[in-house]
Length: 375
Figure 1 (tube, rainbow, N blue to C red):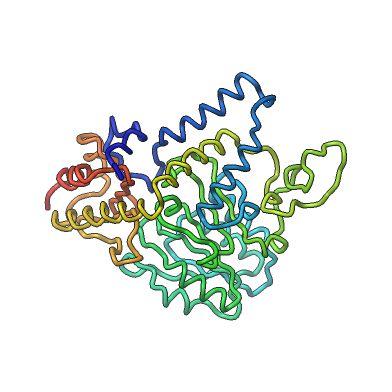
Figure 2 (cartoon, rainbow, N blue to C red):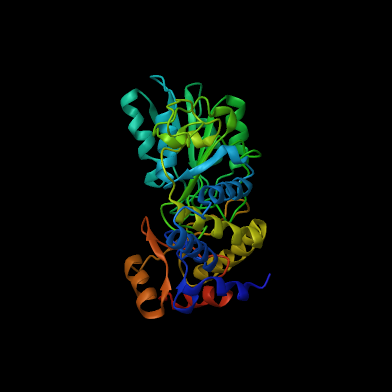
């Protein structure tokens, strides 16, 4: 792969050394062009020649292929929070049920479950230990009253990558549902909902997919669609949505039952363009490249005297490297990097957090390391 040529797909490289894809990523040129295609058709033909919803179904197929699902198991959501909330609010809960999660989830994967406390559902948190979520502690937290495990594929503050295959196999053996917030890995690490026994998955497109905010993916395993009650019901939820003159209340026999009304078509087009680019590169190629870059970064910041929080163990490392200094304020370092060197990173949980993407170069990694204040 000609990684330097790929940089032409990301105009931001002309202005910044951007290593903050775990926050809000820049759009790829492919993604932006897809939006322009939608706008051109909408501007000149309105809906008359657009075939917009046929295109949306093609994008649905792209997303399904990305996670090894069937197209009728996938629909669109406006963000990760919406997808997770549809799971929390759509399942039938019994007083005494519990949800197992961690104490370091992003808020989107915490509040929907906390809201169930008023219905007698307990939220059990497994605690982070030295930047890791010990798998054995997760499994130990599951008991006969556990209804669901809610977990991030990659933790946003530490970059710890969950062993979803092992967790999913255990959940299946215990009759426990597995719900995954995939926003910090979708597009750069392989996700196989069948092989990993994932029941529900939600992710917005604005991080590693390099698509806009407000357009994401919601997956519900086919066998569970009759058990997850739609909570936002509208004309698009129905089996015959375009039969406007006849009220026939029958949900679609697919994940479309979780739609309510018209799609964010500009966002859907953007998702399609973004996914097409990453699929052409190959997710396996992307993950290998990204791990190589972040290994280099982790080693370099350690040699500079910083402490790396992120696990770099096989199958636990991700595109996020979180690190801190005993003597430097992370907020001041972050501002110094951006203001003086045009290097963009973030601060999360008192740590500097760098999250390069596949188009970043070794030179940019080294530039970040060199620009860090010395101990």
